[in-house]
Length: 590
Image 1 (tube, rainbow, N blue to C red):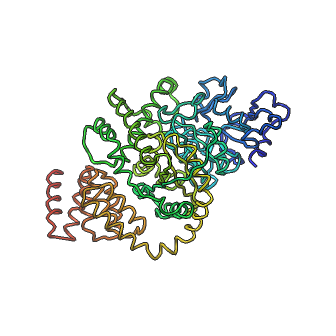
Image 2 (tube, one colour; image 1 turned 60 degrees about the vertical axis):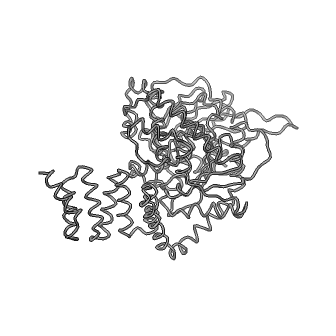
Image 3 (tube, rainbow, N blue to C red; image 1 turned 135 degrees about the vertical axis):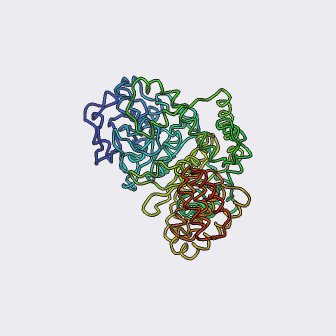
């Protein structure tokens, strides 16, 4: 038990002080604890009440907190040594932490967070990156990286983190544990460093769903109520299209488990892009205000943009003065976002409030009191350490499109592990309406064992099943993409072509067709990359040369564009488009 391991850190005879700081701040990763902890301490629960009163509900459990929560006598570090240097030790312990200690749990340490808790990657160059116990060669996810690692490695029974745009959900998914983001506003933020005040929520990580349930009831101070089963479980089909693994690996697990527990009639399907487009009109109004252009962009993608914009804006409002005066050394990616010029007009602030209100009403209306929305937690598997993938536009768009649904609506979400795929953890997320936290925790407790059972079955059977149907399924996805393209639904077309590519990555037509959709969306770098892949697979793919030439022209690579158009003419001498484009560019270039 993690609680027994915690006792090894205690210096006997010093318990009267309440909090015992056991070590100095750690300067580097210690392999024995996977680099999860930045400070070890012990915050002891009160004595048990005398019989016949019941013992404390969290008796025997140990936990850790991310280095954003105040602990009396300790400096809250915010993931950066310059913050520690410029701030005094806390005079009080965060009420959230105290409530869990008073509930019978023992707090045994503070855990590493991303630099200024800003990123979702889990990397910190100052205190080193905690090792992901579930996939050591891959990032642990952040910002609550150490909290997830401490749970995954069985050092504690549960841990606390902060979820702004995935700070608990992402590391839970990447480390293969349960991550719970409660409804916005139901847990006190007193004694916690803010990241973005309108998005921040205290989050909970655990391995055991029963522990999650026990702690969740204390954390949220929920009264006893009769457990209810969901009457509808809605799978967001368009969100599953974003997955970078075959979507059946996740969706089929939920479908099988739901049918077994509640019956097939409970299952429903939803397209969130269409739903949010109709129910959250302020999304597109905000986008028009910011770029002064009326473009057709997915409502989920717009939501991701708004969420990231809000995070940057509110973070700067809270911490810009300290950053300007202290000039801390920051990771380049964090520094770029923080230092970006970002001004919100009064009208834009009001639109953001409207988006939050509309989103909450939309999700509440969709799910009512008895519904669960099912989405992937993350589109991508955990990237490898040092990978450039985490900086790609596609990675950010897909990740935040999924993560922003709960962050903006303020609804509660739980991340659930579903075993492994290609040696890395796989997860799914359940979302319930705002203030439906008890219902969500009950649903997790009811479904968890069944989900694990079906995850194991699907993982074992998927190879033989996919081998037979893979090419056929890819063709079906391609045809759906072609129809979406004809209907000028460019984002949908991209999703269908992406699914075809995941099923059969050696078909040049799939890449070339996706490039055509990317061109319509103005994503010229992605279009160029897809065309290059198509040409690698099929050197005589005329459309791929023409589309790459168009992408390169829009990017200003005129010489390379002329070469593509000319080569298309070599392959197809009568192609008028290639001839006209090459001649036009030749004159411009001269």
